[in-house]
Length: 262
Image (cartoon, rainbow, N blue to C red):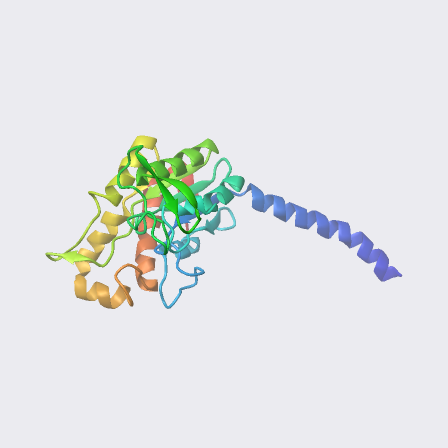
């Protein structure tokens, strides 16, 4: 009998504590990460020793004060991350004071309407579009430019009072005349243009990482960071990329984010 009475007494206390914890979690700002497999590979725990840089951001953050959610998904482009409803899901919880860091481009150069993935976008940042039949979704779809999709991410983020941060895509292990090939005249350049035009923060991962690779050289980079192909890094390579992201967040300090970094 006494045990039952004690249980009745403590149950409301536990409920209050649990409710307070849930409310505190909801009040914390959230750092949303979106992108492709170079940002999150597999389930984020290293698929075949392949890692994305987003999987290591939480290690450099005081997660008691800033929640980190990595929503990046392998195989997605700036287009398919939206058409699959992944962005809509984030928009439902995105709130004032949150952050959204985004990196797309690797898959955006794919075909628009192939039967494998149908994930490509139109090149550039104009408002040009084209109507296609999507064999995956089995429906007509208007496909826009890379810039159009990236602008939507930025504008949607700002509409919620949150802070957009654009990253240019990390470089592939592709070399020419002793230098890693950059994408300044295409995807990386377009990402920068959108950030400048829309007033978003910009991290030029394409150039920062490529410059680091140049120092180490092609043979060392292949041996250390690209175990199976020329796009996806192992853990060591992903850690390098993540370090550049954290360093830039600390230096640029978008909306005071440096206070949450370790």
